[in-house]
Structures are given as structure tokens and as C-alpha cells.
Length: 401
Ligand code: SF4
Ligand code: SF4
Image 1 (tube, protein in one colour):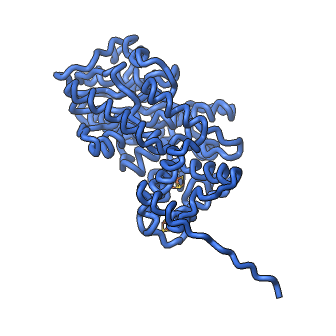
Image 2 (image 1 turned 90 degrees about the vertical axis):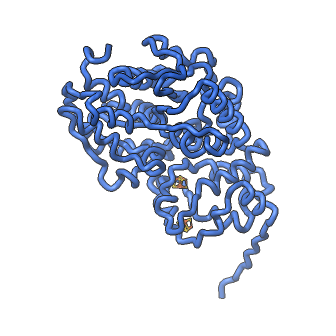
Image 3 (image 1 turned 60 degrees about the horizontal axis):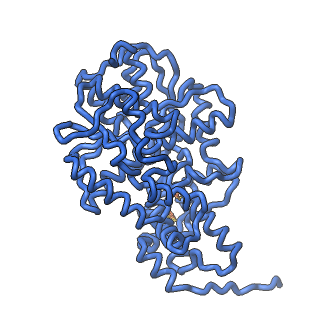
């Protein structure tokens, strides 16, 4: 007869209470069906074992980050920071368990102890010091806008355009901010920016677990928005969108946030923007997790693309809309470099390219940056563009001045 070993699990109520206090209360709802693990993008990656259904159980038992062995703890920290916050699991869980909140509570504890990835520490520091994750000077935040004559926001304007950190500073992504500004001008909208007065919306660092720096940053934005008389904020990033819409109200910041795809689709419907130039390419639209699953915006970007002459719109079969696979950049993962063979973006790009598209359309700066880098690394002949850039091209050059 084989020897039976008794496995003794030591429950740690202190850790359990700390996790629940930090927001992991959903752990008690989980009945361990395992569905979350099968829809998690790590399951598609297939080279890294991420049995996410364990986290609720380990929370209830107080076992998360409980090891005193340095190597074990490092492995666990790596696991805790593998979640990209895509919410595929939340979408499919029969009990609506908010897994990212369970992981975020563990991250909050790790951040408090300074035991989290070095790259993310650097991002948190940069946001605290200069208001953006790139560590660029505040006074350069509006450079993209000065080049094309975008005005500073003032109270009588209809809209504050909040371009997000990446389109404000990154050489490639500045084109998204510029295309958006041109489209707003074309639609006859009065708008401006706050430039150096803006800071990062703080979404990524909140998901990383750096709650106090998030709150400091968010309060600074809320104060500046209120002082400037902001009512409506148009954003290019779905991450800014959910933060302004769902999280700033908890800190007293009630602003009407609108994503550029929703806004521009309305402009097209109202005849304020007329896409008329032939695009002549096959385009596949990638649903960003934060715009699709987390905000329910699936149709506006597709409607915009569908209104452009001679643009063939393609879909990724089985992995579209709420089943879209994450680009792998959420919850701070944009700044974590996982080994080759363990990158979600590689899998997603393959799905998108296999449709036969010439252009991958996105509506999120994180997806754009992730896919641009991946396409270059894989040496693929496919363009990555934001929906606003495609719409801008469809106006014809004479339309934007
Ligand atoms: S799908 Fe929901 S209930 Fe099932 S294991 Fe995952 S978190 Fe638990
Ligand atoms: S949020 Fe996404 S990455 Fe995180 S556990 Fe759920 S499915 Fe996996």
C-alpha cells in the first residue's frame, strides 16, 4: 500500500483579515469551479501556469504571500503581478467574483512592504514626482498640442480633452492626440487641454496596489479640473475613462467622461464629421478589455470603421467583443517584461494577423504601444492604428485645417 502523506495547511487569520480589509471580500463568494482559469489569457499563452481560482481559496485561508522563504515569496509576487486586470474571469464567473480586486488587495499589502517588481516601483515614483509613468517633465506635457495650436482649457469651453500620458509624450502615440484634436476641430467642438496641470489618471498604479499615490494623484487632478470649471472630459484611453467615470466620484470628482470613439460616432451620426476618403484596406478591430468588457463599448468603434468608404472590417472569430484576448498591458503589465514565449501580445497579434488584415485598429494607447512593439519584434507587415487616426485619414487632408 502506498504511503499516504498528511498535508497540513496552517490557516493564517491575520493575513486573511488584512486581505479582506484591503478589498478581497469577494473571495468568500468563490466555489472553486475553475472557470476563471480557463478564460484567463494565461490559459491561451499556455507556457505559464496561472491557476487563478486558487487565489480566493488562499485568501480565505490567509495563505497569500505567507511564505517566509525568500525564493517562494518572490515566485508568489511574480504570480500576483501576472494578472493584467482584463476581467475575462469576472465576465464569465457564475458568481461575479471580482478576481482583480482580490489580487489588488494582495498587491496593496506587497506595496506597503515595498515587495513588488522594481519596474513598477519606478513607475509609481515617476507618477508621484512628475505626474506621468515615463518620467518626462511636466512642462513638456502639452508640446504635442502647441505644435498644432490647441488652446488651454477655459471654463466656457464644452470639453476638456485629456489625452492620457502616452499620447502626450510618446513620439508615435502623439499622433493619436493630434488626430483627436483635428477631429474635434473638424466637428466644430470648443475644447482645450490642461497640459502641465494634468497628471496621470492614476488607474495603472491603483491596479498595481499603490493606493496612496493613486489617491494623491487623483485628488490633484480633481482639484485642477474643479478649479478650471471642467464638466465634460473626452479621453483617448479607456483606462482614463473608467477611472474618471467610476473611481473619481469616490474622491468627490464628478465629471462626465466620454471616450473618443463614442463621441466621434455621434459626430458622424449628426453629420458633423463626414468620412469620405477611400481607405482601401482590410481592418481588424481589437476590443480593448477596458473599453469592451469593462465599459460595454463595442459598437461605436466598429460603427466608425464601418462608415469609412472602402474599409473592409474583419473580426477575430471566437475571440471578439467580450471574448477578446487582452493585449497584456493592463494593471501595470505594460512595464513588466515577461520572457519570450510568455507574452500575451504575441498570441493576440497572431489571432489578429490570421484574419488577413492589413491594419489592426485599436482604441486604447496601451494596446497601441503593446502591439506596435510586438509587430516590430515579430517583423510583421501589418500596421497598428488608433480608430481616431483611421477616421482622421478618411477626412482627406483639405478637411482638417
Ligand atoms: S469562476 Fe468564479 S466561482 Fe469559479 S473558481 Fe473562478 S472565481 Fe471561483
Ligand atoms: S483579470 Fe484577466 S488576467 Fe486577471 S485573473 Fe482574471 S482573466 Fe486572468
